[in-house]
Length: 241
Image 1 (spheres, rainbow, N blue to C red):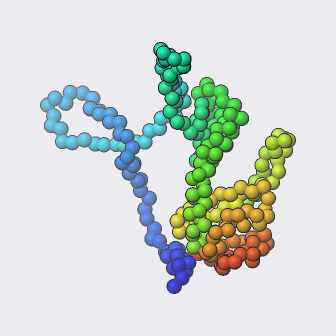
Image 2: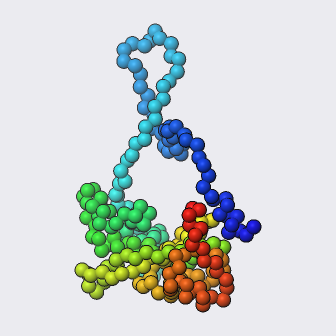
Image 3: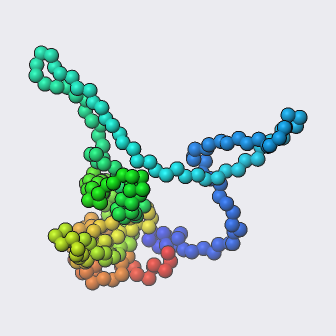
């Protein structure tokens, strides 16, 4: 049996029995804050037989604070020059990592959250922080991309999205997010392109030698015909997942 069909057989839907709803226990790794309570009144003549424990989840909102680095400076006695401690390495100079990518939260909402804490941060500044994060993660992205190309089975699809125009701030143009998914390793690769041409798949799939599932888009099919290696186009298998 080929690796692809073995994977499909393992992931076919199985009938499940109905389970009664129940509350899952709170995660053991969470910090516990104990609050001990005693009954009202005098219990000095009573025998304690145990404790009744009730756990409830609490949430402390995130806090913005300022890290203030104070670096000592020393003047050299016998020669000109100053000695000063170096700043520690940081992902972004004078900034934080926005949570827009992790929680799919747009920057203007984060700006509103900061404003509620009486901290005003320009949206342009937040955008600069996002860009700096992307540039810092480029080496990791290339490693992730290489791992995707080693998969034996990939799913791919593209979706349009409006993109702000840098030259005309009040205008947008149509861009495309290509999404490549490895269902075995649970890897997802996002690749933005300004158009829907086959240049995107050609670039991402140039070292891919496996099964490819897509929707039969003409640009993708043309890209596959130009390949020197064999790719299987599987469309009907989607119902198994």
